[in-house]
Length: 202
Image (cartoon, rainbow, N blue to C red; front, side, top):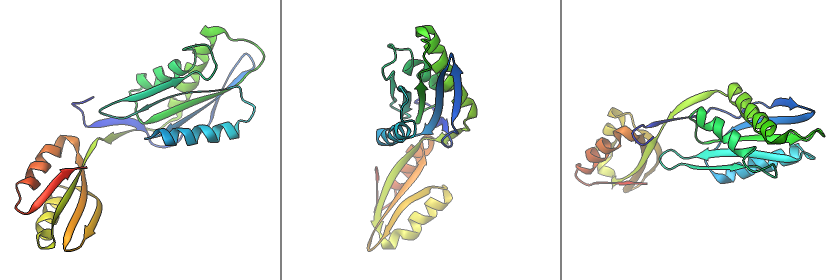
């Protein structure tokens, strides 16, 4: 992934899908996420919404350069739920995503093979519903300079089509910018060669 400066994720939370197998019901959900705090909130909300469900199995992957993922079976036999869900995230090549499958037990045991199929299918159905988009991996810089150099800085920002994240205009100015990873080195060099302008990665 390191040579690329784009990644794939889902645009929005997906609508609820339902997969049924031998009286068991599996409700599937997908969420775009960028932190474990967001993941906890989604799981807490689903636990309240599906009071009485037996298992809340999920998998997530976060990050672009360094990947962090987790697969949770939530009481199902080991590797029968979380990993089949995670397998679908991988096969679609997605990151910054959480998929949850909420199971209501229907009285008939599915066996490990049946569970793997059910959780994989639930995740597949979620991703079939999702709008998959490509986003750029951005690098953020902070520019610090005197007010008198404002025009010089703004001209480059405009020319290079850089995204301004925050700006603070005093006698000492600070602007945070974002640029695509593949352009980052060029942008850094451009500003660092300018007199009286400090640039650092944030």
